[in-house]
Image 1 (cartoon, rainbow over the protein chains, first blue to last red):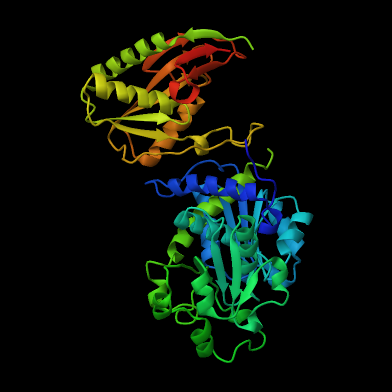
Image 2: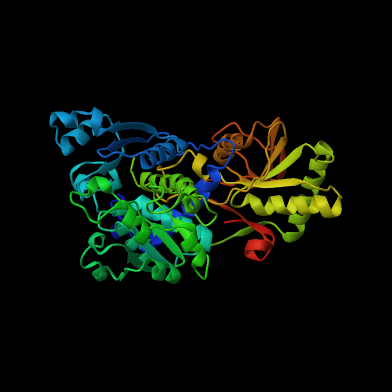
Length: 309
Length: 177
C-alpha cells in the first residue's frame, strides 16, 4: 500500500508527485466524510496533536483544529501571545515541554523561515508546517491545487498566475513548487518591488501587465498584500495598487474566457479583488476553505499512520 | 500455490437466489429496508443480490449504498501495511431504517464491528442484519454472527478464502487457498 515518502510535512519542496496524488486521493474520501450528517471518524483516537501558533491565524488554525477533531485526535492549541515564549523560553524548550506531555504531532506556525525544519531536526514528533515566515505554507498550496483539480479535472497542463505580493508570500512559493510538480505552468504578476529577484530561476515567468497575465491563465491566485511584513513602502498607495493589480468585474468581463479566481484569505476587499469578484461564481474562495479541512485531515491521517506505536 | 474450489459458478448462483429469497421472506417489499455493501469486496455481492431481487422477483426501488470502514478500523497503525480507503456512497439516511450489511467473507468480525460504528454517521437504524456469502466459523474475535449465510466453511488460520466475481476476476467462484 502507498504511503508518504516523508515523516513530516515541512514544505512542498520535500515531497514527490506521488505524495501529492496520495494526499488528494485520501482528501477525496475525507471530503465525503465531512459532508455526512455525522462528520467524524475515530481513526486518530490514540493520537495527541499540539497546535503551536507563534503568528496570528484564524483560518489555518481553525481548519487544522477542525481537521484534527474530525479525526478524533486529542488537540491542544496555544498561541504565543498567551505563552511563556514572552518570558524568554526558546523554541526547542517550549516544544520539548509540550512533548513531555506525550504529544505525537506538532503543527507549527512561526515568523522565521525554517522553524518547522529546525524543529523536525531537534524534537521527536511528527511536524507539520502551518507557515514559516515567507518560506512555505504547504497545506495551503495543497488545498489550492486540490481546488483546481476539483474545478478543472486536473492540474497538469493548466496555466496559473499568482498575482500580487509574491515577495512576502509563503503561499506563492509553496504553490509554485506544487503546481510545477504536477505539470502546471506558472507565471507571477505584480509590482516589480514585490516580485523577488531571481524568481525566474524557479522556472517561473514574470508578467508585469495584469490584463495580459489574466488573458494567458486558466486560474488566477490573488495574494493578499501583507502590510504587516512591509518595513518600507513597496508601492505608492493602496489605491494605485488596486488600480494596477486589483481584479474587478469589468476586467474579468473584458477577458475572452472565464477564469477561476482564488484567494488564500483574508481578503482585503477592494484591494486585491473587489467584492463583486470575490462573491462571483468564478470565485472558489469558499470552496478552498472547505477543501482545506479535507486536505489537512488527509495530511494528518497519512503522517499519523507513519508514527509507530 | 495449491487451491481448492469451494463453490463453482453454478453453486454461487443457487446460493445468491436462496439469499435473495430469504431477504424477501423477512423484508417483503423493502419499503423500509436498505442494503449496504461493505467496501471493497461486499460491493459486488450487494450489487448481485439487488439485481436478482429486481429482475427475478420484481422487487422495485431497493436502496443500495456502499460503506467504507477504513477510518473506523481498530488496527490503524498496528499492521505493517497502510490501510487504503475506498469510496463510501450512501445517498440516503438510514434513520429508522432496517439495514442489511452485505459482505463476502465473515472472518474475525472486526470489519462488521467497525461497520456498526461507521453506519451511525448516517443515522440510527431501527435494526441491522448481516448477510454473508462465506462464514468462516471458529475464527471469530467478537460475538458477531450472520443472519443470512451462504456457506459455512471450516478453514484453518493460514488458509485464505478467495471470492471471485465475473466483475473483477472474470468468473464466479470461491476458492480455499
